[in-house]
Image (tube, rainbow, N blue to C red; front, side):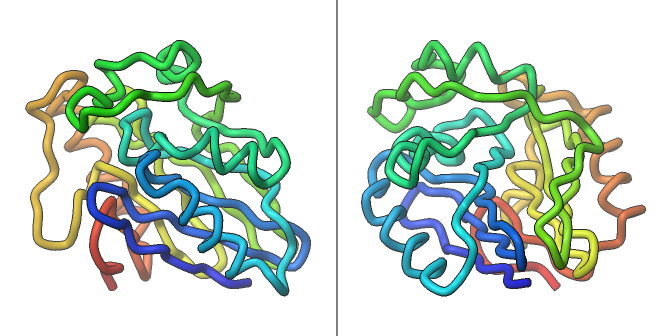
Amino acid sequence: MRIIRLPGIHHDANAVIISGSESSLLVDAGTTWYQMLQVERIAGHLENAKPLERILLTSRRYPFAGAAKHISESLGEIPIHIHSDAISVLETGDFYTTWANRYDSDMPSTECLEVSNGESFDLGDGSVTAIELLGHSSDGMGYFEVEREVLVSGAILPRADSPSRWDLPGGCLPDLVSSLEIISDLAPKSIVPARGPTIK
């Protein structure tokens, strides 16, 4: 099992490859700005590993989801999974609620499958569990690699030196508090936040 953080470039969120003995997956995709480079980065890390079987998104926001369609198509029409609240937004390529407009960019129309709280993905010598982490937005998800206790948190934890935000469209303070309690109870050994280095 290998867990590889691809540091976000410019406005991109961190992307994480989780590669097991039987399959691999990608958590988050970044913006469309560097999507071709992102495909090269992913392919380079998977040269001697199992190919990607799915893309898991922590948020509909453009820095997390913008490149998902291009990566999926480039690597063989890989299914993209996201919280049910984000599916219609991504399928219509909504310019506003994905925040693509804040980056003077278009959001590609992206077909997605629903991922449910507690859903598990077996990779052979490890597994990844989806965890609903609301508060920053209504579609927040985290993904926990169970055996190595690594959490990819998404936007609920922006970075090690930045506070969580709830005062944005779709945010909710009680949900944020509940999500932070979930993370605390989970007690991961490592957390990959939205941006910046891993939190140990």
